[in-house]
Image (cartoon, rainbow, N blue to C red; front, side):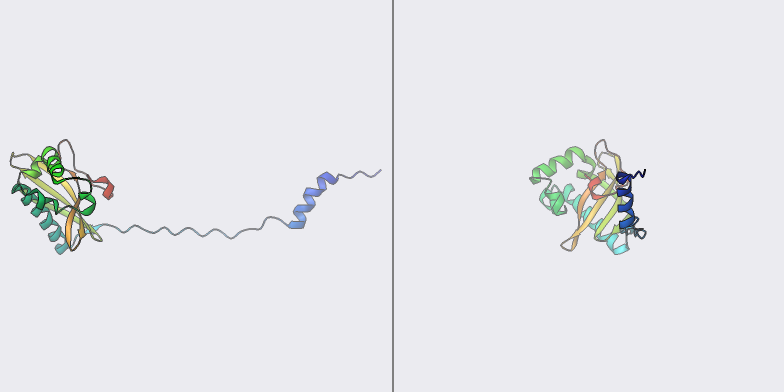
Length: 166
């Protein structure tokens, strides 16, 4: 008596007929584009960014808030509905900036049209603060894109992205 097991042979025969799964070539590793690295800011770029920061601080000191607002980047300007709102935020949260006595510019690094500059500032009240400015070149001039640190209850740090700035 001959016994067959067609239900067992059918899957085996279909594999043999089709063949073993094809061995694929090793997948190519995806190319990871390296983000451009920040580098020390060249002298001219550093000087231009510092000049814009100083000009804004001078406008604060002269109580010329309209002029001070012109040193903001387009993106930062959209955060403030009015110059009065901008003024209130600076005076309430960054009093040493609004009434500064002296400013010193420390290390600066650049990435394309952006400059990140460390600043030490002393207010008229004698309080010293540190901040990191993110400057962006727009319409031929450096403008403030954000500031980290320097405000009431803040600590300066090393921002990693523009989203890390105030």
